[in-house]
Amino acid sequence: MNKKFYITTAIPYVNAAPHLGFVLEVVQADTIARYHRLFDEDVYFLAGTDENALKNVQAAEEEGITTQKLVDRNAKKFFQLKKALNLSYDDFIRTTEKRHIKGVQALWQACKKEDIYKKKYQGLYCLGCEAFYTKKDLVDGKCPEHKKELEMVEEENYFFRLSKYQTSIIQIIEEGKLKIIPESRKNEILAFVKSGLKDFSISRSKKRTKGWGIPVPGDPSQIIYVWFDALANYLTALNWDKNDKLYQKYWPADLHVIGKGIIRFHAIYWPAILKSAGILLPKQEFVHGYVTVEGEKISKSRGNVIDPFELVNKYGTDAVRYYLLREIPPFKDSDFSLRRFKELYNADLANGLGNFIQRTLTLAKKYFNSRVPEIDQDPDSHPLRINPKIHNWKKTWKDVDKFLPQYRFNEALESIWKFIKEVDKYIDQNKPWELAKKDKKEFNWVLYGLLDSIHQLAWQIYPFMQNTARQIAKRLKIKKLLVKNPLNKDSWTNIESGIKIKTEKPLFPRIN
Image 1 (cartoon, rainbow, N blue to C red):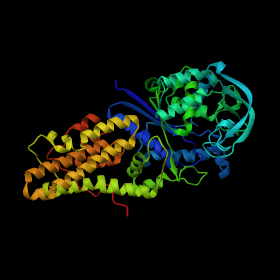
Image 2 (image 1 turned 90 degrees about the vertical axis):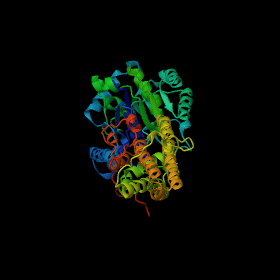
Image 3 (image 1 turned 135 degrees about the vertical axis):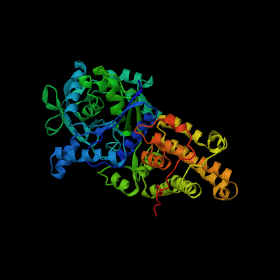
Image 4 (image 1 turned 180 degrees about the vertical axis):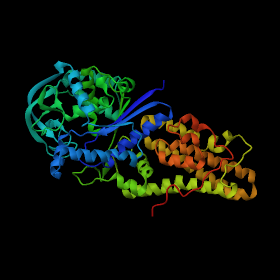
């Protein structure tokens, strides 16, 4: 039986259309999922939308439409990211679905009875975060995440006895039972937990939520708190309440991919709820930073939203994926710049990968009628494969296999592009266009190595840029890369002499 790997993204609010900040997360998760599939793992990749938030209600009111109409429209846009970004998720769950509603109510009832109690409460509430804050949490008297003043809210709600789980949460994080990456986020959470956990409200009045959301079992006057509701999607998508085969096969989650702003919900609330319900904990959480614009988090309220669909339509899916994975450090915030996007596109994609492929295929077309040349040497002895002075593709594979499991996408891509630069240097040094006139045997050897390098590059970029990898595979007839789920072990075979290849238009036309 293949090793299973269950990976999830966070589910975004649908009060507005998707922006580039969320796109970063789904592209990162998709890259991880594709990488694990290369090793023949049984991957289950989940995405979805969070539709039961009060902010969705308010957004609908501002537009003068029903909440259902708003969430239906925007959830469709989030689902359309799958095609626009070539995402490979296996399921897309909406929190307004019946399977989710029933599963959330079942999770509430599965929690220990003594862990849920009702009391009156007064506190500072941030609608953007859908969370209460204490005064010590505030920055300049405002929400640390949204930089807005908070509303004082007073009502009677159900509470979850989070304080009871303080010691066990510290233990599971320190012992690595719930691994948090990067280490800085782990330390941040441990410091917060050790400062003392307080019980938190897990319901809102039906009046304040305007009846939108999932009713508390046995108390229709209360609506389940959106974060208790949202976190449960990782279970409800597997039909856990029915003990479905999906749940039996894939739970616990192997990896939650989340943004830094929701780490407390995932690393504190979520394990406590699961422990109360007697459910196994997820294994790992990868916490990424934000895509910012002029140092500010992207948000509709700030008016700095960048439409991912426009970027894809203008520059292509893989150009957007490449920029996000190469230019945005995985664990830090980083600014998006259209100027930098164009620079990177021209330098790395048009002049780098694209130009190398085009000039090599053109040589094959001119001198070998678009066939891979015959050679009388062992392909494994080619300098682009074994020369210790060259950052060859064997070294690159080692880096990819080192950095991707650590979610260091940018470093993996840097190694791949370092190999491309070495190949360009190899071309300049060997001048194949001159060899073709004076040393046919050596010319065959040089060109074979270049074509074999393209073959390897196609495999190496597959998790990051599948469309481009497949286009290269079609040009070079790399059949094992064109199947539904290609396997890493097949990448190490050499390109075969005599194969008829295609020379088509450049993969990445320059941006003027």
